[in-house]
Image 1: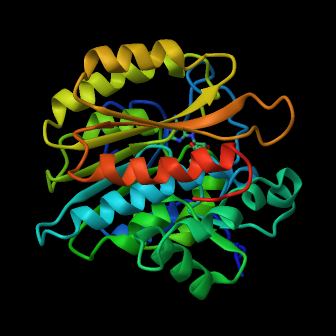
Image 2: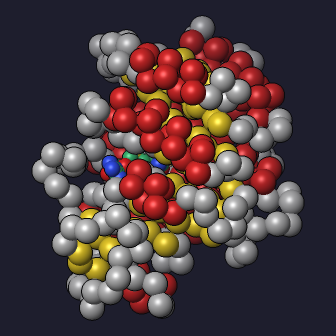
Image 3: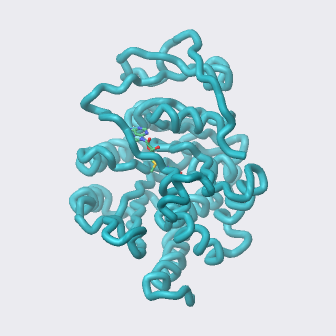
Length: 314
Ligand code: SAM
């Protein structure tokens, strides 16, 4: 039931919502219809800043890194909604929000089979992640899986604000299809964050989940995050990163830890998806972690540890 076909046309350009964007702009008809007065600026990427994006999360949706990231994200968002005050959710690298785990791409890697299909049993039935998984399959079909923007939409309330960026044209199109009520910009997510912080409402959480396709990401991300944390001095800022056998993430983590000594750094390890695959774990770096996150993350870690020792026995 995923992936209804759609035609993508253009509507009349208006002023860009992100003032720094001076490149040629085109506008997206779906978002124009949805957001009324608001318009969507498409940042036409320059060849140096954004070489062809090829990453598609469908190959990896529901893998063990997603289980780590999505279960803690769902927990944090549910925790934040315990207070009636509205909040902002921002995501800089949204993906398509809804994945069909029976798609050829997902079957080909088998990562969901090693991931969510095993890990579902780790969580209590009333865990916010399980709520999301259940709501997704009930609404979209048995084989579907929620990406982080869908988890946010499902967990947050009408009074909360959701702002998403996705640069890849097809992923962006599918994102809009999946989430017709959210603001989905086709723009550079890091630029978008820079332009809109601090958000209204000021209370809230931003997820930064890059595909790390651009080698420079490991250098530029800590610099950007330092600026975000300063501009949004009450925001919870969450960065996902891979644990790589190459160690490519090490310097980035060192810079982040130096800049934000109070942040929570949480890592889990798992067997590589395929022999020789370079990703052997998943990390979250959380600036201003909500109360209770460390305990929730510690519980989750025991599950991953058991996985690394063989049969699940926790
Ligand atoms: N956060 C999603 C989730 O957990 O369901 C997965 C996102 S996936 C890891 C990263 C996405 O970022 C890809 O869809 C890719 O096209 C997009 N992307 C890459 N560079 C980007 C950029 N500079 N700005 C916005 N999106 C970008």
